[in-house]
Image (cartoon, rainbow, N blue to C red; front, side, top):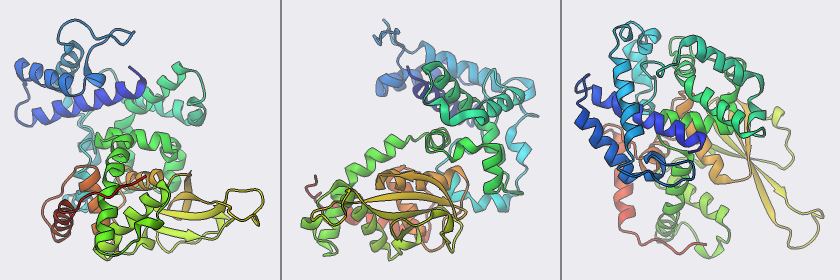
Length: 377
């Protein structure tokens, strides 16, 4: 099992144990056994016990999952755990917690109660220093160092959340750059997002891709678009996202800003600090005068009016933009509440309590159910 799968497995199992403990701190073994069997049946690639060759072990293949859940529950039942509850360290007033309620509903691991078994505050700090020294190089190094960097991010995740969740004294962009610069790197940001939400980048991406034909069909039905002129996959994604904005009568330009080619990003001035995608057109040909030159786009994630990441794919930019709001506790801009709520509900399968915004989103979903998906590339 690769490093990412291992960490995903661990976080899912830990979350399940945390949820079961809401009912009873002493989880019956038959409940743990049943949960493990369901996970192996539904997600064998991630949870089934296998040999190094990839061949599944004889039997139910649940031994590892059962062991990890029992160890997690036993660890949380140790006497020292109440005093070491990391949520108590934050000491966040209820009113401030309520500000990020819409974000927290999608983040079951918003603040882990404790470090994982075998991890201490000291070892988590050592992991932070390890990542601080050269996180960008780890992906290009040998497999062992790559796995160590992923493990370091996973083990120090509660420590990362303690900084990011300090709503009494929120970290600045510079604080994050200094303390956890790896979180501003797309790979580590999205890995953190998967720990936080139990929802991977690949999951969200695949769900959006499957939804594009429905969005385009709805846009065509409303006579907002001409499908015949949408000739590339990139245009399909862009058009689908714009249709969501158009339905809710929210402005695309509140989150996606077009800038001229060859713009110096360091000189870009934005009116808002919230995460935004800048879109810059470039020409993918040596001779710009040649007829038939294909225009391409570059996309840049800006946070606090500063460039953070660059993308060649609009879809990658959208997903990272969405993730940045959850990872860094950004409140949704007042100009686009329905758009972001729609993405959360439709593509992350996470639902807030009923509000005026959620009712609008539900109405949109009902209308989409009546549409026959369009043919796409």
